[in-house]
Image 1 (cartoon, rainbow, N blue to C red):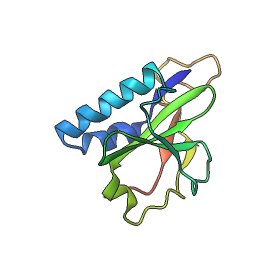
Image 2: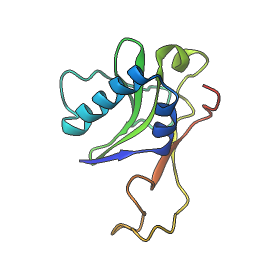
Image 3: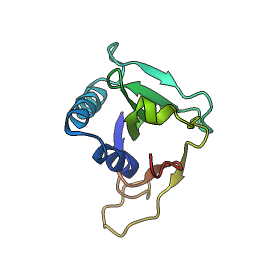
Image 4: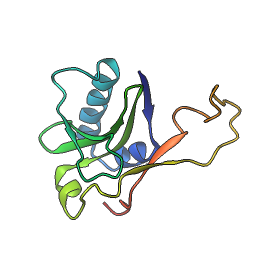
Length: 127
């Protein structure tokens, strides 16, 4: 399984406290090592336009938004449950192509660098 990290994930991770970041990084590592681990709590985002978006529990207060398919797992966004739930339905989640960068590291399918070929787009500025 291919493991990807979106720019929106790293941006949202930077907004968390040090302890919250540590918990998120531990969960992200666990996801990378074994996405089917019974200790991970996955919940489908029912109102998302793309039905492959899931919420993963980091701890009681933090949720991680991922895009999960049979061949890949993309870390999209992370925030506290309070901020995720206030006025946000998940209906705006969708994958859009990211503009190609001339990094010179194109993959075989021509999509570019695996961590920059897709990103999650959501009106989440100011969350």
